[in-house]
Length: 313
Ligand SMILES: Cc1cc2nc3c(=O)[nH]c(=O)nc-3n(C[C@H](O)[C@H](O)[C@H](O)COP(=O)(O)OP(=O)(O)OC[C@H]3O[C@@H](n4cnc5c(N)ncnc54)[C@H](O)[C@@H]3O)c2cc1C
Image 1: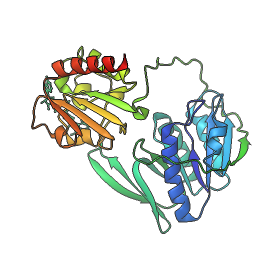
Image 2: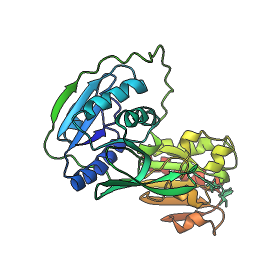
Image 3: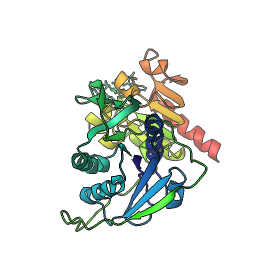
Image 4: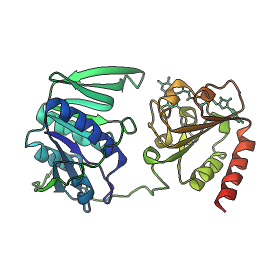
């Protein structure tokens, strides 16, 4: 069996889960195995949607998240004999899958860009050494592997529904959650957004990002930033796009005052349409843009905002 941990928000599977499913199906085909899913739930979970993608769906109601509980849920589902366990890369999966790999004496391939089977081995590529090099690695099953979001095509439903198996997980008494204060969510998530509006150093100041936020909100998208901007403290790291930030794959990527360094391109060059605004006609970003505007972002951005407002009225 190839087991996929299906990440969700309580009502829908996250896009990254559909990427992990595609990777799982590729391994399952190579190894002649079936694909099972596991939903780890604090309450509601999208059982009906999830069973459309797998032959067997394990569901574990676990209460408030702790890495220990989530690891116990995955280990229970893996008892049927998992050759590989896949999950979307996230802070949470980083915390609980290390425990799973240790318990199973399995290889741990984290944040992989690609993965495939050759003979009895599972191969993957991933960034290493603070993302300065790309590594090709291999591990014999059992393997625990996480999938970097926006690296893989999304799986389609199977056209039939899988069997649902409810797991009962004994209490894990190590860590108890006493209180939880959740960060207020603003707009759509960067990795799932269909439109991303990114500001670079060319925006000139943190204040100028008000207009980046305005354009993103008008287009129903998310705000991105380059590393130069994050390092300057203008925007949070959670918005960084690129090799050491997030990988995004929206339909529309608008780059404002972004030079187009290779490390930035690594996180956004799979976007369907790239629009770049830069005052330097020689800026490398224009080589990758479908539409380019040579101009001062402080003049072009307000004009773009007005144009979108007019279209929406
Ligand atoms: C190991 C490593 C990992 C890295 N990871 C990342 C990463 O994940 N993400 C990332 O983004 N970078 C990353 N970098 C940094 C990367 O190399 C670049 O330094 C960075 O992307 C540059 O950001 P920028 O385009 O905002 O700034 P700059 O390169 O300074 O470009 C600013 C651009 O704005 C234009 N401009 C200036 N004023 C205006 C104006 N008024 N109107 C219009 N245009 C204007 C300029 O012509 C210029 O092209 C990494 C580097 C290393 C070494």
